[in-house]
Image 1 (cartoon, helix red, strand yellow):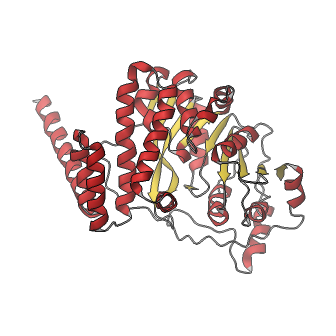
Image 2: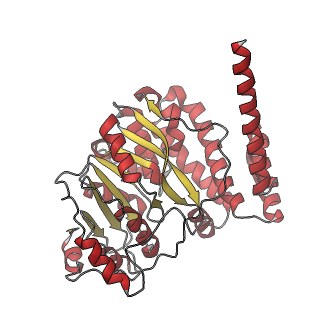
Image 3: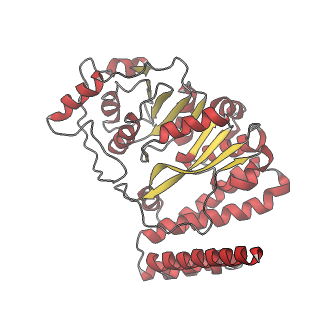
Length: 394
C-alpha cells in the first residue's frame, strides 16, 4: 500500500513487484533473502505476499522517517533491513528530494511494505525542508529519523517499540555499529567507559547526552514535540543541513517533560563512508571540521540554557573533532596528510590541552596504534577498579 500525492499513486505498480536492485552488501549483520537479480525475484516476492502478516494499525506507534536524495541502491538496502522486521505498529515514510536516479521506481517495488508513505519533490529543496516534510507526513506517536545510506540491525524495530511501550519517553538515543561502505563493522575496542542504560530526567538531558543529539540515524522523538518545536519556524535560520540538531536540542531543553532514554543497544549500521564522501564534496577535512563546528555552535547558542552553555560548547567542540578525526583516521591517511592536519589543527586548537592529549595521538598514530592505546587504557582502568573494590572489602 502506498500513500502519497497523485504522482506517487500513479507510479504504484499493479503487478507483483519485482525488485531489480541487488544490494552490493555482504555484511554479516544482514541477510537479504527477499530479492536479488536472479529468477527467484518474483518467486521470493510472491512468497512474502502469501505469508500471513498482521493488519497494520490505523494509528502507528513508530514512523521511520527517511529523507533521501540520489541514493537508490543504499535506500534499497535500508528498506530490506526494515522489511524483515514487519510490525503492525510500524510505518515507513520516505521523502525524496528530487532525485534523478531510479529511486521512485525502486521504492514502489516495495509497495507491499505496509504501510508506506512516499513523497517526491519536483526539484531539490534542500535537506532541511525535506526533513521537515518527511516528519510532517508521519502518523506515528514517535518518529525515528534514519539516514537513507544506513541500515537497521535485526530486531531493532521490536526493541525500540518495547522501550516505547515500557517507558513512553520524550525521546530515545540508542547506539550504532560503525561500518565501512559495505556495512562491515569497523574494528573497535570496547569503550573505555561503556555506555549504560539510563533514564535521564528532563533537566539533565542537555548536559548528559546533548552533544550526541546530532547523530542523525539515532534520533527517536515524540512527533508531537517535534511539531511543537517546529511551529515557530526558527529552524529555517539554522545552518544548512543542521536543522535536526537545532530541533533535537530545542526539544530536549524545553519540551521533554518525560525525560530521555540512553540505550546502549546497537540498532543502526552506520556507513562511515558517508563521512569521506562529504570531505570529497567539501574539499578538505579542515573545512569540514570548521563548517561542522560553526553550524553546531549556531544551534547550541539558540537552544542551550545559559548556565551550561560554556561547558556544553567545549564538550561539543571536543566531540566534533574526535568524531571527525576517528573517521578521517579510518580512511588510512598518508603521513603527508597527517602532518598537514597536525600543523593546521595546532594553529587553531593548540591552546586546548585536549588537543595534545586526545587529538595529536590520533593524528600521528596509525589506527592500530590508537586502538592498542585505547585498549591499554581500558584494561588499566579495569585493573584499578578491581584493586579498589578489593581494598574496600578489607
